[in-house]
Image 1 (spheres, rainbow, N blue to C red):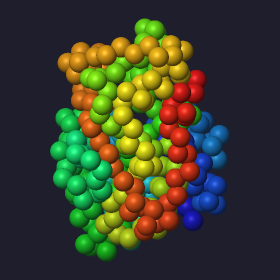
Image 2: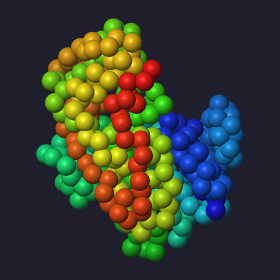
Image 3: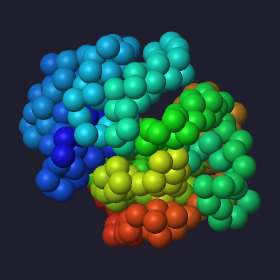
Length: 288
């Protein structure tokens, strides 16, 4: 089997490429720079030169593959339009083959306890654009295509991801890790390696399926930031911020970090046999 992937040189993408190859799957991957191409080659994938705006390249690469995983995001102006056009091109190329699209658990907003994929959606501003795109992707299940959407929670592991960029590195520089509010809100966490395995399994999921990519650990932000303070080299030193202060410092993503979210990944476990194994998030987050 051969799979074409976008975003393969990124944080989640690297783990997913490695998971695909471990499962004996040949990988071709979009590379928008020579650096990305070298990273992909080192991982064992075959680079395909192009960007998410190169819809012809995407359509052709998807058509040559047996399945597609779309992880890439272009955060330049017009993110929603670029993502929508890229998804349409790859779905056209994939035809009746599996197409796995990346959403995000943040679209569920505050969850009021533990919820699953059927929960109402109330996204923060930074991810509101995803709703219409995911609806369009899934609608193609009615035409004989095989779209699937994976909705990752807050991804951690290998000292990378958003926690590193927005909490550990600023905490290391300032001598204290930021915490938005009183820290009582929860984050739905997933280890990057477990999430990568879910992407592989999703290639065989029923058309139109949606899976919350969460490992079952819904932890308070206060506990998370204490763990991150160890990774930042300032154990126990936390800087409380109001949401307004956090938005000034972090930008609009602060609203997403302030969400109180608890989700279950039971559907993926039940339907796909997904079995997350990295289940000590606090210990992982505390690692330097």
